[in-house]
Image 1 (tube, rainbow, N blue to C red):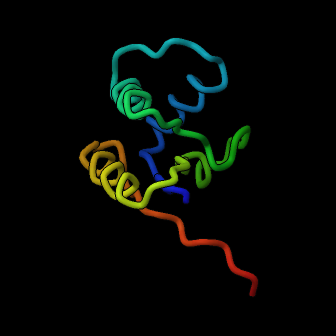
Image 2 (image 1 turned 120 degrees about the horizontal axis):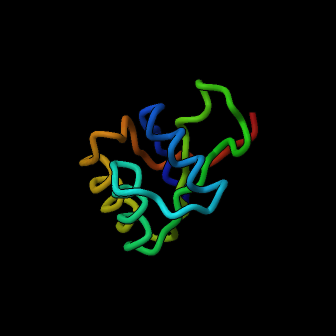
Length: 95
């Protein structure tokens, strides 16, 4: 299952730069969020990599297998002021 995450635009831009350049993040809100996800053994991935549209940049995802872990992770993510939304993405269905 996929956890969908919407970040503040400024933080999302930082994380896109960190991910695309493989730089070590400086100590700030972006690095705290990345360190937390890394410590939990998950990766924050852009939903729209390589896109510079401010309407799409804030969206990220984390893939997990376990529903209870997903709920726990969502609760942790929602504690970050940089996270505007975090939820389990509904499964895709045909129209």
